[in-house]
Length: 402
Image (cartoon, helix red, strand yellow):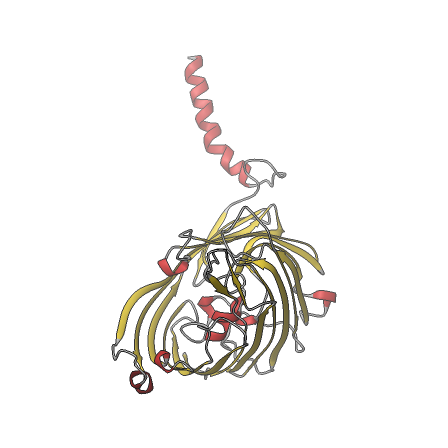
């Protein structure tokens, strides 16, 4: 009988306790901190929330791309093979875990890249981002982990929020991409309504998923001025069609000492060479009534052009200057047209494979649900001083974010 009473009491407690616990907020460290809620939103994924104590947001992004590339007539006359290259691939497949823990001031972000092109050819590790951000003050926060180096605007814009199928050749060559380190930041410095932002950081200089040995250092700083106030500068298109102009002007500076990567923090790894790179850049982003303008100027130069090891093998630094201009218009329809011109200039002495290259192209984007569900197509002509490398390129890409 006593056993029966104990079982009955246990069942009653199991039924009553969850409701009682759900009405209370527990201090840090307890098992149930607050009532749990769940929601789902287009482009944001699934959210699990426990008040201000904890937030987990799970989202995924899929990009399927088809492409056709063929040499120009000038390239064929110069000796290029008159072949058409075509293919279909999963361009990006991302899985993101983000949110905050204990307090909204402590946030986390983890992103995995599961497609082949999401990983580096010599290091097939899916981890792209893994960092914590602690923002105790309006004017001072700290971000620590593996993340994008705050240099240049188009690289900081997610590949999910681009106006074209992919970034400019200038950004691909001269941006700094991801690395391991930390930086100080504020998105509303001095309380000016988001008009002034900064990041100042220290990184290993070798890129993502490299370590634990560190024999170099990357110092970077970025300042951004938004004279008309805060806006979504991390989305290239003007989906809001703001009746007032939205403008950002940014400047970046970086010094990478003793790096073993050909493009400072990314690109092929040198076998023995180590170079010091100085990088600088400026960017301007304007949005107004569906019109958008994005332009960047980037520069990278090494302290020396080449190094030769004991076996007589020579490895080259890559020094270059580049710019691009991108203009788009999104009318009160889910259809945007965009044009881009970009140019990349090698700065001698440099890697002899780095040539003067130009890109000219346009795109159409069909936004079924803004960036969460869209279909994009673009066409480019790439012209190179090495005529054999001049080519036409057409791409079609579908994106789903959920």
